[in-house]
Length: 565
Ligand code: ATP
Ligand code: MG
View 1 (cartoon, rainbow, N blue to C red):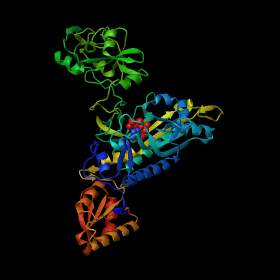
View 2: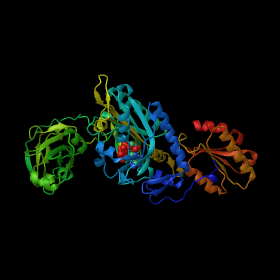
View 3: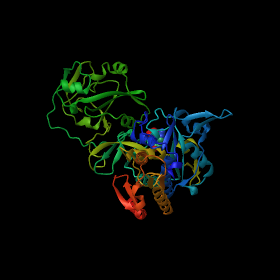
View 4: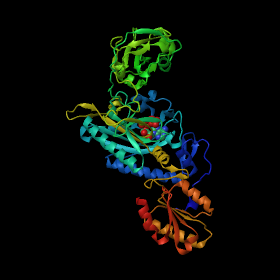
């Protein structure tokens, strides 16, 4: 493509509202423009990257046994009412009325549409399993659209749905799709982890998120430094390999701790390590109050508490309610002789010897506290994993990293088929709800995540599999005929050989051309300049900055080699 004819509006300045590298560079290099908050036009260069990501996605989905289709973006409210999500989805769902006042939504995801489609067409176990996908624009009225394509209100998603007669069949497809996702993100050049995610009531094995490692990611991942283990920190189980210290049990004693409100305060005031302090927080769980204990140096994980209690809602009890229930300030709450509340504790608490806890009396704590002797509790894994903890798979030590969720695979089970009457007849002629899986990839988010991992101070540095073009041919001075002749001949030759070439034939200064070329970030640049007459050009590798002179007739061979590296 000749650059003079292509719409690539590059910018020298950093756009004011773009906080992160990928967002800044995709705007500056002319890959996209914002129309409104979270809404973008993808310009020609951006479209080429998207197309390449989509091609990889399609190839791997087909290989995993999913077949492409296209469902409507406009979705009838009735379907969402059947599933119950018309009321539960919240303001992210973009709703509108048609001219007959019928209610619709712009699709944020397609479980309802696909379930209604299949339930009318698939009647027998003989037709299962089925696995379909689409690549389509999705709409979510996000509260905080930000970071460009990473969190848009209109974005491109690949969503797949599978339908099964048996759990084993779902397990098999889940594995195939999981493997497909691995291949997709590897082929995109991304540094990522497949992470065990929160699936609410379902077990941890039933959903994974694919996270691109990046400091600007919104999620924290706990991963093993030596094995494959990785989990969202909300989900990572903690192994209870604690040990009791061998000191003798002391007597329980009530001590004054005026002005000590936090674990920090108490540990300083009493000169006792935080590990010996028993953190006691009152939670309101559904309609019940529950006192949750953890070691002072640990954090209580409310998702684990919620899952352990099989609860719907959980929140910290407000200070006034603590006062009503336990008759003291938040900072003095403790498990000894506490009334009217259930007491549960993280496993580590059971191993504390001669600890400290609140005395349920303002300004007082107990010392010499020994769990079992001084109070009873139910023990479970209720805390957040920490860096330095043992990895739950028994291999290595836990470290933290930030991640961007680019994909999500999920065993839905019968959540939708039951609500929407999506049944089939099994071998015995009995009606059963279809068992479902769903599998999403943020295609536009993936493009931004690649840009986030592949850039330097001068611009984008695309990996070749997703680069908008393979080669950037630059004619330094288009007024010099020998330069344009050599450059356009090279442009034609390379294209004939199957390379994708962007040819900068613009009447611009050399400095502008080079700066634009660095910004755009194609893998290889061939500069045709002063030595064109002698058949000598300059080759530059974007990734390494390495550059050298070469004879023009050697270029095709060189490019083949360089692209292989
Ligand atoms: P998030 O937690 O980031 O809001 P989600 O878990 O709600 O995402 P899913 O419903 O799992 O998202 O959607 C499948 C995929 O679509 C996600 O893994 C993500 O890559 C992508 N995605 C979701 N929301 C957005 C968005 N607002 N902008 C761009 N991509 C998105
Ligand atoms: Mg998700």
